[in-house]
Image (cartoon, rainbow, N blue to C red; front, top):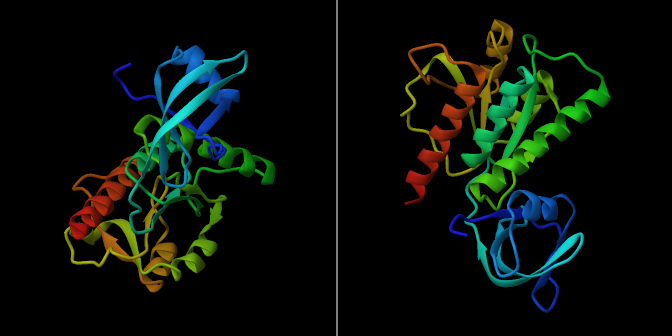
Length: 243
């Protein structure tokens, strides 16, 4: 097959260089990908390594794969993005795209204007759903580092977390030009508000926590669009600094 097929590897290869793929990944390989013995596959461990292998044997509910090569993906400086919780399908899109763009972590944020009603069970279900979206995006893009999906996070908790980062960027209609001179070589936290943005008191709290405001567009952007723009901006600037 000419197009690379990526699957998730949950266990390290055996000492003889073989891997047994089973469960949903095996189902996707055989039923969706329609792969057969002799086909080349790529396995992602989520920790930065991609394994190239050949399907040696197809069993009833598993496949035996011989690992022929392994590749280590360069790890970029840490960049987490907090996204104000929005409606499910649009949140899914934001998470998928920022994953493809290389964020290190995703923080679903509950602020005063977030679209969220739910108990602890629903919070766990929401996180599980987003983790599945991350896995699918990594398989689609061939990304070997899987970003961490944080639990749904309150605004007050986000303010506490901000002090752990070297740089905090807030997507803001009144922000600075996106080409401002900021050191992105260390840890970065990007923040995008929900529909309607942050309240005035929340915005003030973020500025007091040391956030730089960044202007992304002349037009008002949806949360998912702003998340994608901010992720692209940071990763592009990071890549330039690493050249």
